[in-house]
Image 1 (cartoon, rainbow, N blue to C red):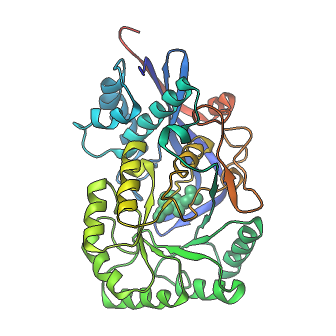
Image 2 (cartoon, helix red, strand yellow):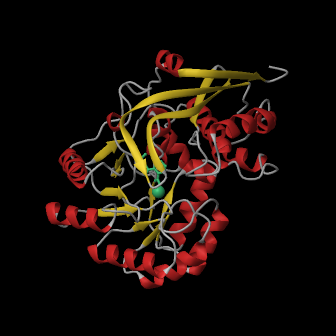
Image 3 (cartoon, helix red, strand yellow):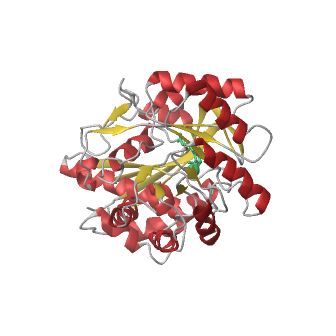
Length: 376
Ligand code: OSB
Ligand code: MG
């Protein structure tokens, strides 16, 4: 596989509903799309960096400059026997996993399309449908939150995750109200690192712990594995790490110290599919179940997430949900839909297997840049 041309675009798309986490509320999504071309075929990758360095230190501006200045020169015109060779070829560049992933995942799509096989097959997947859950942001009131939970349960989603933070009614009262209204539904919370390890905060987490949660996601700081290990000792609920698992090495540390019992895999955070597969395999060897996280992706990144979710150790429902929760219209047609049993079909065509609406991409593009291989 040889990439002859790489095109970057920055897009904005309005969200169907605002999304609020412990670091703020967003009404639209700004992201980079990467298109790579080789042998008359195109591959697509969606970058999950954001406008702001809040979930991660990477921003769209940083990713743009790293891709054009450092990643593109290391992949353009290079003969890769397999897309798993792309991440190692970028070793000289430290960090910037989301920038690397956008290009690496486009290379996997290109390779799978050139072979005429669905990406799930290239990645080693074993399923043709994936179990789907939802991530519900912080709302304006408990009543609004309960209404959202009711809507998503009625749609058939297999588990509900709510965002929490240690303020007002945004954690213990919210969970208490959901349990009172909906009973023993599969429920979990995601704090996006909003708690600290001091006694008052740990007490607050211990109160959440009493509600039979499937797991508590990333309660403490994004780079603090030691405190998560101490906290896991005090909680009955499994801790699931998201932000803290920035590499396979970080996961090895977390598992060795007992900092979590579940891991959320996001290929953007890991630097692409190859590192995500290594993380998946490491977790399987330690009997640690994994699920696929989400970053409010458009249909392009969403399709990629669906393909990766078909690997065998993705045994818990992930944050990969239907397009209509995010964008209307989406950048793909037909959009990703939820079946009545709370599962999503894995696209069967070559590569991502979805029809990309280039006219919609064009309309949402605010900046673009193409780089061609010198001898192409
Ligand atoms: O922590 O999982 C997270 C969205 C943006 C940034 C971080 C996270 C999330 C989500 C949304 O929880 C998942 C989704 O529905 O795509
Ligand atoms: Mg999370």
